[in-house]
Length: 365
Image (cartoon, rainbow, N blue to C red; front, side, top):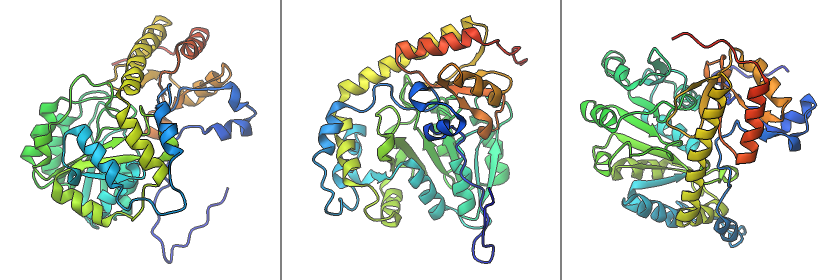
């Protein structure tokens, strides 16, 4: 397919590639989507709380929604024991990522991120006209120690930190994050916690937000099951959040999403049930996959990587067993697939596929 661009007016920016096969694409390659179980996406197997559906039925679609989603922001603030002024709600966390880049970065500035991470950080940085650099050698080791010399050398304006990292599942110690924030007050650290639900302890404390150079991102599309509504938010110091709030598009979060978010936060029982299932089924999958001779990468998130040698080939082979896994080539990891747990009986189908396929020789450390 030929892509036409007009270089007279627009800068060339790489496409935002997320790499996963959309269910609609399966029919184009001769596979019935209704017969495929999706292990590639990081959504809750249980879906949204039943109260979310009821709340959405009361959404008002004939009028503009609350301009700044203030009722939802208040609910989020209470959830985190913060002030409402410390919350900005977005149409997914991707919107906030791009907004932060627009506000913080100028041509000639630099932003850094871990190697093999969420591709939107790069796109957001380039859209702002800044330079993007990745930091860290061994993809699966703790990357934060590498940021100290990198910050000293590159002097970035923004440091993007997806922790646990997508797709590697790499986590971090709270003390490491606190050290970076205290030692480098002139750097904005954007801590993307879209996949933090399985962590045993917080990665940050509320007092860190008052330092003025930390923005924490959360997604409500993953474990809360609201992916189709696009809903995320930012937490930070009052000054940073006021600037974000003034700069964001008005009415950026529709009324269905606002009411759904409030209902999801209120149903702590459904959320706890979701996390318990993810913990249990993740471990069952890991035990079963390693039992079949495959190499699994340790992960602090619900998802994890499996070394398969050739991800493109293995992804197609898993489809023959009715299982869609995530080819991680777009992350720069063409030898790995990413797996997220589903219902117990569905996970058994995936384990059957792993048992039938031949493991690739283990990767040498």
